[in-house]
Image (tube, rainbow, N blue to C red; front, side):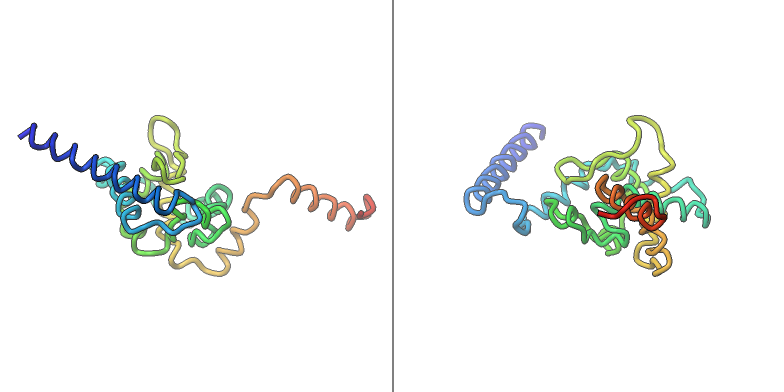
Length: 193
């Protein structure tokens, strides 16, 4: 039995290697291209294998309160929106140019994941996907659990919630400098160039 399993694994590896070579030689490996159905299947399988079975059964230990949701929404705006957009669509310059692209987290493919699966993805990241690990190296973290609650809210975000998030989106140093110069000018502190 072990020998047959080993042979099957070897055959699958050889076939996978041939497929990988074929894709690379025929199309190249540009992140500008749409993933093939084979790549999508392999990426989903890799994500599935990356999440331990016991993580799938985990339940969110944090009670859902308005205060927690506000904190999670603002945390998402500050830490996650660069890739995922405030609305979870993934429609940002970074999100569109990742390979694979950042998922639209409002859709069923994400919403159907268990709380434990979402937590594991946020906390530990997924190799070769562009999704980094955000949680501490050991132990649980409330930020990741809070974000699980927020991700569940994404399909129904209100215009007011999206507006609130905008003030927490990251700014580049140049944007901050321009904003300060404009405020100084409006307050009569300096001349605007």
